[in-house]
Image (cartoon, rainbow, N blue to C red; front, side, top):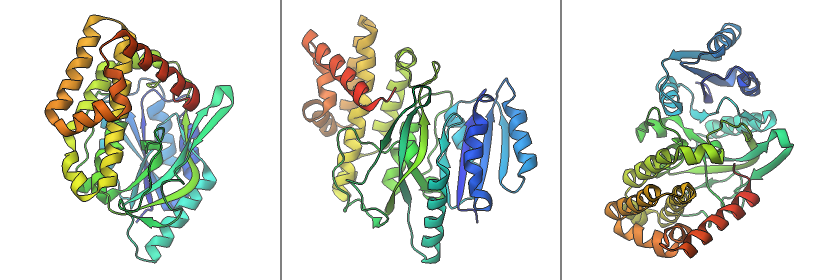
Length: 340
């Protein structure tokens, strides 16, 4: 069995996909690379086919009608045969030395017959064109290289979240929790980084800079202008996340996981609320109200926590002062963490 299945969803990725795929090939016979040509209109499909011809035992290619990033992940998971599963966006890449260390660790736990449902690794916000980087680490939360459970984790900082780029799930865990991402929808990576955590029982943190998260394209989904134009997508994903996990049940069994998931939901609400405020129209303010009301209907206890005890609550102060606090806090966070 391959150690890791890498799924690379591609749409019109001819300009940068080779950098991504080449960084994965260092894993050689230990990995499989599943390239998803998601209805591309450029040379993406032919580039993928050429890689498959050159590395037939490593690379698989799926050509499909355009369905969006989530559709590509779903298609890759359906045929994945690796012990672990990792999504790598076509404009991102992996650190080759870190990848080899991850493979060595997977081999080691296999030999010891230990079970790890999830590996967490560091990722780097890579502003390639500006020659600036910021590495996001988790060493204050997990013991490095040790099997950990939700009962043993420490507290996350307000700026710390386990996003898709930091996660390598066991393939069987993803299939067990029946994860399926919506098609033609942006920001589905949040679903991938949230819902499967409730199926995870054991995890291991490796303090290695595995993933380079490229920031800088004008059409990138995390570009602020693009995010504002797609705020309805952000709202949709926030609601899916809230509806998919019963936080009160999680709290009964894994209180620390509950706190983390609540903070993640707070982050999602904060982003959606800020983007709606930035649109500066009555319709957007109404959408913000409706979003918060939907959270209240789903989970009243979580709603109260989010409104009165979390950062998200500051984005729902129905005054000009509240709007001022929200928008200026967002500017500070952007400057410190450079997330778009």
